[in-house]
Image (cartoon, rainbow, N blue to C red):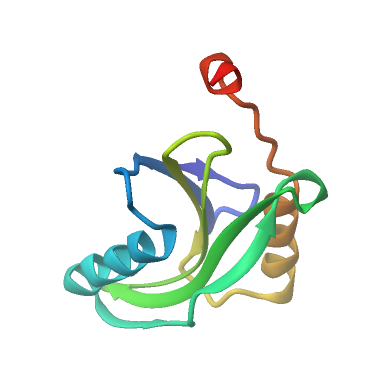
Length: 126
């Protein structure tokens, strides 16, 4: 987790190996079902297709959610995508404990836009 310049905002980066035949949409659906069991009062938007990276080079899936974890309200945006040439899912989550503002959404758009992807050497030669 990275703390951003705003003390209430954090960027969480996670990854996971996808099994052969796994689809990104089903991974996100499983993640939301798991989250629903861990928190209270979960609300989230439908999953939307989005573009991430320099020149919008990669496709991802995005979701916004809010929930109660313990006594703390959490608001977040998340984008998930599969690394080019690999079966690795990456998820970037922008989270805070106050409602997301237009400035947060601008920051989130910049984060998604500025992602850079580098293929591993063995992925390039296959």
